[in-house]
View (tube, rainbow, N blue to C red):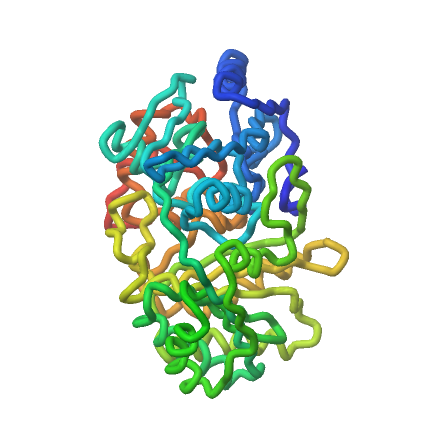
Length: 433
């Protein structure tokens, strides 16, 4: 059963390997029988691509492969079915180490950390190692577009020593159009120069807005850091609590258990899309908020949407310190990452009007931006996009190189999904993307 019940598919068969040899055997079986392959690790694809994105595929489910091993040199070897919360608990308990990752403990590991090497299954079923010095084109492509290039069967990560204390916080805010405009402008400006120790985002729904985040340090340091923002928006911190590393992760787990492995049984029905954009000017902020509040004031309109404004860039952002061409992930120069979602009705049903609502929100911003100035995030995949548009929005100027590597390594599209990299796009001029 998929995580997102709105997009359910039926595989022709499913394999649940418990070793690398069993992954290979499953894959060889698919090749021998001319069966297309999909791979499910965490299973949190917004489009159910772990089940293939269409009926009739062999689904290779890796969730029983979740071992985490910390080595004496502070690297960690991790199996591909491990979930973020489990990885966090294991690394901390084995040696008080950590890796960078997202907030949801049940989400799969892939794509969340600084990688040293990957071991993956090739399109012909063979195994290859890739790193910054070995099979470098493949290593480059996997960091941002992995599902189109193989099955990663083992990860090796650099780890870091987490701080002894972290301080999660929440700032509750009044809900009005004027306040929403002022808040987004202030948070965006503040994030431009915020220290690297601070993670911060703005969450807005049809009825409320809050600022949340995590500070790598104690309450005193957080208070000092937030003072310029609090003075600008005339607000106070509603909740803060200096805690240990794992307790800080638990704060954002939304009630889920932190350490999760197998079996995992969580489902929802929703539509999500995204924007990666530069800092918004005053008119763009006003346009977005005006569109949002027009929906909020319309009684007959769906109000089951929400938006995360993640402060993705800034002068001290680790993401932004890496050149957009250094990996397949191209949006490192963007200030904001927006995740826009609609969860439908209270009984789990989804209304088609939700698609149109979120598109109006997006258009209110992008209509005044030049082509190529904005993009979308592949991990918040938009099921309403056709494959060509999705590739352009997700990968931008990196798409020609990705398509060229695809043509070299998987011209037969063994690793396919509806929005995956296509080798046929390799000749598209960069200036059209």
